[in-house]
Length: 171
Image (tube, rainbow, N blue to C red):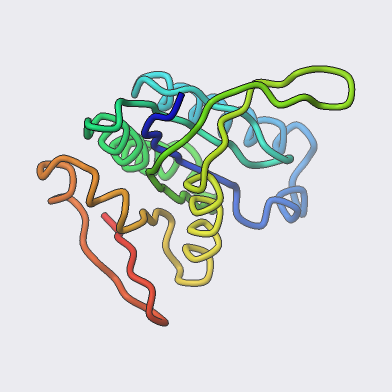
């Protein structure tokens, strides 16, 4: 079944250099705080999160296609997560990308088991927005598509930026 989904992808910037000048205990504490904070914010916004790679998390927020719920949840969670990470991990850089769009949920057969999976373009776009945020010196970037699908109250909290023909939004 197809539905609208808000996707938030968050990653620690320069994660491989976290261990430089830090003890394993310190790195573990940073990682623990990062994953705990992402989980708390995602859960509090009605979404679910899934760890990706070593230092990244994919967060999903669903809503009916005719609703602004998925967009508002993802965008609001992104702003709240940015504020929490700045407060709780001020010494660590991170990037957040947000997109919204159609998704099909289902089970994908892996070699030995079926895995639940949401198949959607917004996931790829959210990852690319993290890269854009890194290159542009931002910690949080949302697609124009996400803001178009958001309520006017949420969209009003963001401003547009354009570079290289691409438009995105920052809070």
